[in-house]
Amino acid sequence: MKIWGDIPKVPGIYGNTGKISSYTKTGEVLSKKDELSISGTAKDFSIAMKAVRQIPDVRQEKINEIIQKMERGEYSVKSSEVAEKILATFKDNKI
Image (cartoon, rainbow, N blue to C red; front, side, top):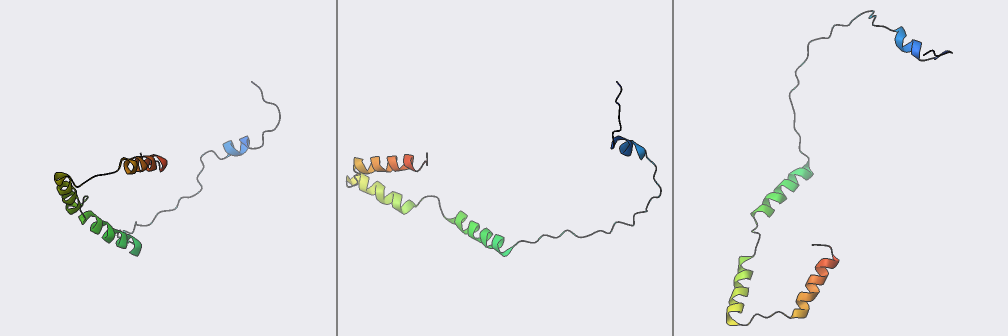
């Protein structure tokens, strides 16, 4: 295949074929100690997360209260309230 005409960038690429005029000696590598810094916001967030982890997932006193009401037959929930909660959950895309 022959390509006619002047292709301006090709000779520039192949013109510098590996001649190194001089080299520079690199100095010794100075060791630098690693440093870690944590922002005040991150520290506050860490403290808050530790506090949240210590809180139990369920409120056992509330559960015990409902169990006692159920055993005595005093606990009743309206079906309309249950339906409203189910629809609200679907509406808010929580499921």
